[in-house]
Length: 503
Image (cartoon, rainbow, N blue to C red; front, side, top):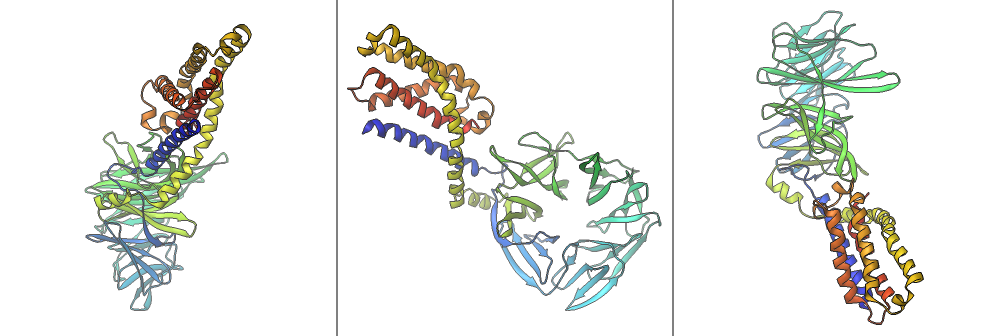
């Protein structure tokens, strides 16, 4: 009985190590000091939202009938309530507990106490901040206070068409306008004439979108995305620029590097430009690996390093589509994860309490680890195919003995077993290093990939298989039966131990 029990027991122990490695991979934090993805237990639609940061929590207002108010604190504790407002989806809006400003059709509406009043007509766009809102028609920009009063009105030439604008904390406005031939960025201070801070040539077929801007001390930073079709291929490029207010500036193609891989992100989306620790920060969604074998759209945070390069670190760890990142009060963010039932609110934080909670093993972690362990069987089959090559030299040696020295086989000479086994181990030492190169180096756990592992592990596996074979073999077996038993154990250990990580 032990001739089967010992190899099976050893195999189960190895599979347990495979499972623990998969579980450890799933439970890895996205970055130092950040928690894994936490579920907030709230469903939410993929819409424009209005965000206000309070001292210890953040309010997120979701448009609809009625408007939902979601409060999230630094510990990612969330609550939801409905407000007595109805706001159409698809546009930016301003709202607090008592009043709201939003676009309905081509009218700008001020709502308070169940009463709606039209502030402006022929409005093409609106953008809101906690200080109020800005709206624009083709050639005019309007600054509106939270109580619905028009504080300022700025006109532009008839050749210029206002496309987008952002209001800062000091009621300054960074505005994007187009003429027939140029793309222009203006800096607008209250009661002062617009100041041109950037101008570029407008290329036919270019479409501008997602204009965002922030102020950091005396500098204005802004981004915009250009969509175009060239030779039948779609091109999506995002540009970044900073202006100190002294003359015009130039924008540069925004290249963001992945801190984990060093690669640039090909198609980042859902850009959110903000200020964090006094410096511009970009949150976005992009497709990349969350583990060596899984690729998914995740949330990233990018900052500019000392060399002026944008470097991003991952913030989400879920294997779902993650979009619409929102920075919260404190060092925390939330976003939407696409699940079967719709979009669910998830988040991550640097809070030690949240990090500790996120590292606890959940039922979902175990389920995913079991699934990934079974998925590793594909690699085991590939390793099994490779391992048959280790039997070529032992097979030739055995054939030679059958024809030239049959007596040694019939008399169960011990040297026969050692010759075949050592040829098998020698084949492993010769070929395993090349097999364990490539994907194995980043898929396998650290205890399998130390320098010279391809030469050391064949010897270790030989020692283990030799001991198991000596404990489990039947003393009445022939030398060929003992040899086959040891090689079978050796082959099984190789397949189970190394196979899960070669593909």
